[in-house]
Amino acid sequence: MLITGAEVLSLLACGLTGLGALESALHRRNLSKVPVRIHVSGTRGKSSVTRLIATGLSMSGQPATGKTTGTLARMIMPDQSEFPVYRPLGANIIEQKRIIATTAKMGVPKIVIECMALQPIFHWISERHLVRATHGVITNIRPDHLDVMGPTERDVALAIASMVPVKGTLYTAEVRNLDVLKMACDDRKTKLVAVGPEDVAAVTDEEMSGFKYSEHKENVALVLRILADFGISREDAIRALWHTNPDPGALTDYKLDYFGRKIIFVNAFAANDPESTARVWNTMLQRYPNVDKVIALFNMRADRPSRTMQLSKESTFWRDADKVILIGTGAYLFASLATRDGVDPGLFSSAENDNIGDIFEMILENCKDSGSTIVIGMGNIGGPGLGLVRYFRNRSTQEVF
Image (cartoon, rainbow, N blue to C red):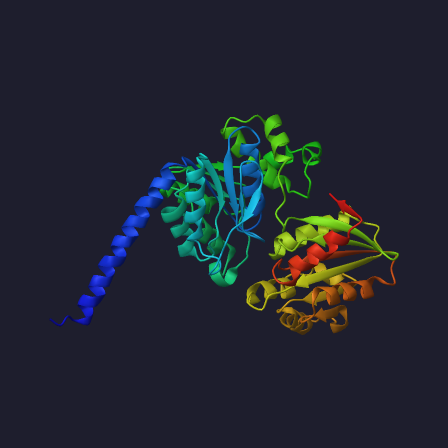
């Protein structure tokens, strides 16, 4: 008997639906075995906040796993050991199911998982079909990934708000787009807990002094509020947070004395929207006001043209640098846009196709006539960015916090 093409498609659909129903049932069972699920999103600080929450819970006697998607995807165990996330076919939001299944099999009742979605529809799918969070966290909302979530900051807010959980609790340190998050929480009958500037100001320098890396007070204030709702005192929470291992993309600076050339290298690659990048730039220049030379180093990606345009045309802070070194596949576009905007081409040195050793030599060449130089790496951690961080870290004489 012959069947039509429509009937074939119908049969295939029935088979896929049955398989999907079985997988869904197994996933729901795993979710039930992990009753506390904390889903972390936002523009900046997602990986750091995920690590902070997971560490704060585990080190306070409430075992939790964590999973970051940032520079290098990692699953974090309650004892603070870490394992790479295996991705045979590249990054895919479906991998969240494996992390939850592993947590359920281990018998760990809490998980803190970083949202890996960019497209708005995937934010919603990640929350409603994969994580189904009891607690949501949105660190902040900045004008980044505008080619996917834009074109405006408010569009980014609407996109990220699609991961707000249903009938749960949402924590955020966002201020400018709080009305968007409130609208989403009201729609989904979720409690909104907003951490404001007064909470950030309450985080003391003494509390920050115990971190092994440069953490942001906004992140710490947000996590302290979350841990307080889990019954952890502020004193115990701070001491627990000091055990947090930094993400490879976390803001860190290194000192290097290379045959008399004194260099401070700043890993600020993770702060890649204009607002965050300018903020880190100013912070580092305030921290090291007596250096003789300032070098801006941008690692740009050809597949992130909107970010390149933002940093080259819409940002001006880097134009006061003594030199700008451009690396990565998007180096030419950055220089082209900036020079069209009136920047002197002589400001730039390009290492678009060079390896890490050649980039290091280029940095040394630009440091030879100064007593001390600060090099601030920005743009993207991918490609040569991470390799350059490792290069300086392995050769540093002193790590600066």
